[in-house]
Image 1 (cartoon, one colour):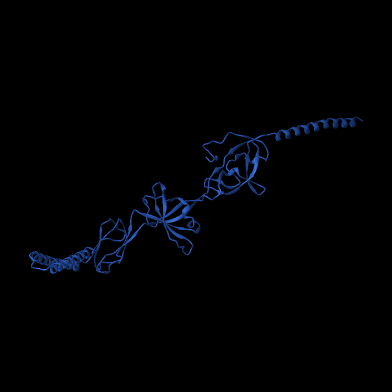
Image 2 (image 1 turned 90 degrees about the horizontal axis):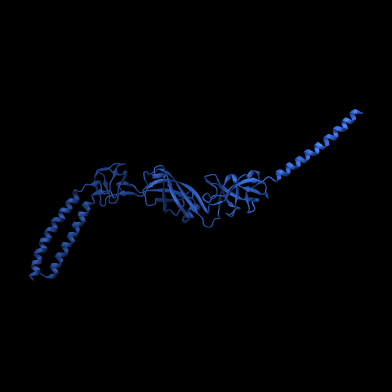
Length: 361
């Protein structure tokens, strides 16, 4: 009998204890539900309809000049070699000018003789002893001979070949004693100080040349490592790879220490006024929920809402590029994303700085 009473008494003590524990649990759950999470907000930063891209380019000289004589003859001297630096106006090659000199001397003698004859005929014409027709014929003959003399003198001058600009000799195609025709390239000169960059444009860039902006060449050989450029010319015919060859020139500047044949990187912006506005957000503000990419937005009553977004990519700083789902005025949760549920009220920790729109700094 004593044991039974002890058992009943024990049960009577356990029941109030269990009820107390359940009440305590109920208060704990109620307190958890009333917990207000603290979050940090960020404003989406508008990126706009601009795409950044790069192209591989090769440095080439702005002009490659083929130097040739204006008159035929036998090459007498070549005064430069491949790789030599030359200055504008420097003598680079000479033809054998013996025959041209003889031609000039012969015409000079004829001109002097005819001038004396015209002088005597003028005296006769002034004294009315010579008809005007005969005198005019003599004067015309002298003028024709003087023209021939100047032509022969030019041919003599053309036996000397000068550099038209500062540059580097790329090739010498003839040796002394060889015969060359008028206009035949003898020396190939690369003009120095006016480098260009040649790039291959894909179809999508060729179709939107007017939208290209902020073109810049990047190379360690440039002052500051970069220099602005602009499109100089584009060949309007695609090659076998469906690429269009384009030439870029430095915008009002020289190419620094760039040399022909060097590889460089050309960066550009592709502006698109018709593109939908895109926004930048810190990547940790974005989360996945039920197969959707979302962010938490906070309304004026500090209540969070699950907002699906379309993320195009990550930029070079690790920010998410949102191309759909935002209008730009939302307040987005940047810190505290993982502990939130839709519809709950939150505490906002501070305001977004006006000097750090987007919270990207």
